[in-house]
Length: 197
Image 1 (tube, rainbow, N blue to C red):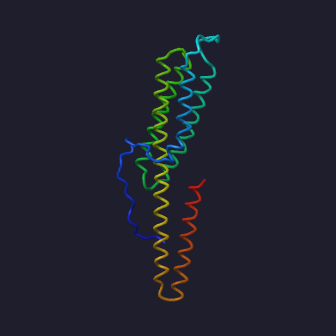
Image 2 (image 1 turned 90 degrees about the vertical axis):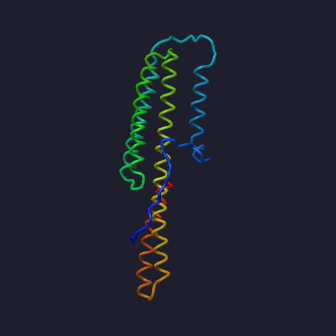
Image 3 (image 1 turned 60 degrees about the vertical axis):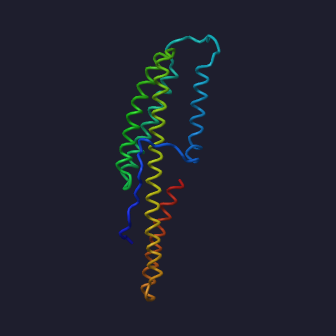
């Protein structure tokens, strides 16, 4: 059943997005804690290390792993943006921001891996990591909002189908409308189940 439903309109600026929900805050808390612990460990005053200073092979491996994770995230983000009907423009912009911040992070982490003793390069990499985390968070929130909007629009269609069932005038009309209502419920169930994955 397709009908002319009023579109859901959001008035906000995704570039000035602030995390204000407890759920998102709880999801991001482990990342922030890990970043804080890493910063504390890397800048602690343990005294001179007995390890050889210079190039770090582990840092290059970690940089490559962050680059691969960012690439995987971009592929998924592109797919979500293509499938979205509600926030397509905002999602495309968010994916591009992740791409830009990911490239900045790639360069900064590579430079830091080449010279891990440089506090300037470390600071540049930390700023790049924070910017990438912020861009990724924005994209996650937008993707979630697009998903919620799709769910709400399906719910509206189901409500209209139920109203049509209530307004049936005879037995045949009731059977047809109930069948249509059932189809719409299956679609809504599918969309809701996808959200739980």
